[in-house]
Length: 462
Image (cartoon, rainbow, N blue to C red; front, side, top):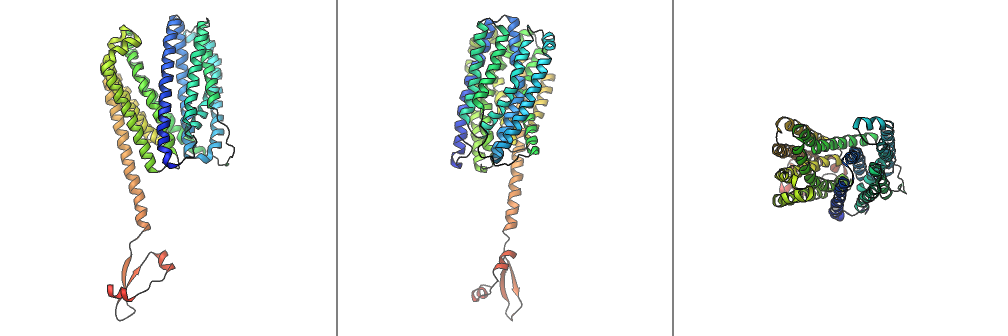
């Protein structure tokens, strides 16, 4: 698929892309969960802790990568004539950021190993060496996303997951331990970059992208992704601090299971952002794409809520073991909170797509509010889960209200110039004869082109 397609196919392209990315996300999540469970069985607890730390480092780097991808996707969709300039600027920025991160991790590897009590500092060096590749491929993923090339974008995610699982398991089984896991992560970056890499446009139109425009989009994207990070992870940190280890572990298991719904919903957001940002999309196409995304996310949330209501305890026993069965009581409220968060993130992404920062700012405000409420009143796992339903619901309502107000203002603003462009004719009388003659004075431009004439019919009508 390319970014130059007919208007009649734009919404259907979004739906197809959403289906492809959703299916890929489910498959990749299944591979990642399976890899985590396999490492837990293959590695001793100390090395498994090191492997989990390595995965956490990748997740932290993913926030930067997601920002680069979102900025590239939004900018290319909104300004396709600047694709070459956007590619050049963002690839350079990604490479610089990746090299800086690699130097910091490499230079501080031995300090981190001692502070975090890891078995080897080389895991930090190996993962750091892959970060420049990881950040640059995020830009290329954004170019694919902005051009609605969802098939290849999904293939890059699949290549990353497949390479990581195959290399990590192979090296761990061969006895390389956590070093094997770090090498697998590095190889997965290379595999994804090889698939996602885009070619420089053959016909460079020479249109440079404004640095201010990129900066505004980057600020909005960073704000939204920071809010996502807080909303998705702050409760786990609070649960670890507030509850005993066993209770915190059960809560974390329920959270991990329900959070998979958010990752699937995020693929819907990825598919709809280019349609909303595209300069060639009509307002009707944007409304239909947004309505379709809301419907899909709400439908997924409803199906997930029904599934955990009926099969919650069985899911916890099968996936985590009998010791986690009590966490089934948390699945319904956590699923509802995740569904509301997914819808709130979608509305915030609408503003990112349109080059505004109001929605992301509201989402970040909701994240801060939720953090405060949970810290004060989340004294049990159940209360922490239901409080998230309340706080994400308030955040969603605030975002929806802001969108309605903005839509009303934009409608009023566009209707006023239309009235000024089409003034009503005025009727006056001409005193040039004994019998007054009616004349219709058209707007100045029209009257200058065609002189006004008084006819017998006009006299009769007056």
